[in-house]
Image: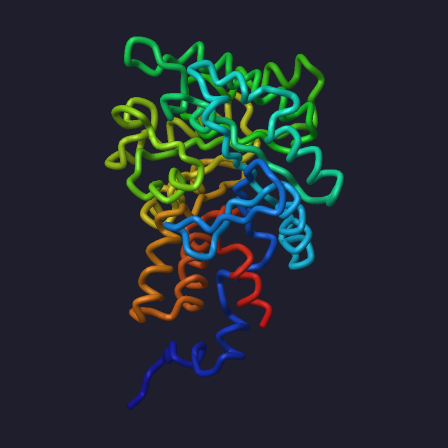
Length: 325
């Protein structure tokens, strides 16, 4: 049999496959999300996220040091607010001595070169569990944006490298950028959750922070998962308003959106490999239905192949260990 082209030649050994691989994962690709709680020497495993923990700040610092030693250069912080501090204004979110602000300062003091990104949304601080201020059963936009600006400024003052608005309120990127400029935080970046969908895959995350909505859902501000063009529109608007990095969330069920946005923009694109996606792999591996390590690397590679420059993933530490064996 005569063939002009034999494509299998480039697959015949691990060495050849490595030589021509188009998508290569490295520790530089990962953002490690961290859940932080009050107290000392506390590590609470999240039941719906096996192997992942909500830690007190002292143990979080140890985790950050380990991540840095593995070559992971970026963390994304989320905090669990005590119920007695929650209200409908979210004012604890900009408390200069709040857990988020203390966490930023402590981590930057412990590992100065670690890139610290911070979640900017009101749901962990809201008595309603929504990303915005509630009036007459409605999540109001403009008053929420004012709160998000105060929150972002407090994070910048504490030393955050990037604020990461995850709320999907209209106009918040422009308002935050203006406030950062006016208050001389010109070195603080914005990673915008530009295409964040109203997804069922966030459930375990809400368990981690006790931030599930107390009524209704988040579909009046998070995007309809049936829409693609809307994601591009939202992302381009965020870039015009001053976003430095844009994000698609979730990742695995939205690989087409990651590619569409990568083709449309000239800024780095990040993707969030969310808690439900993590939990599915963990559950299937526990049942013996797939190889966990192979599933981790294949999933993350698919996200990068789709166009993500950065991947926020709960598998960040595991992935680096697998890749460096």
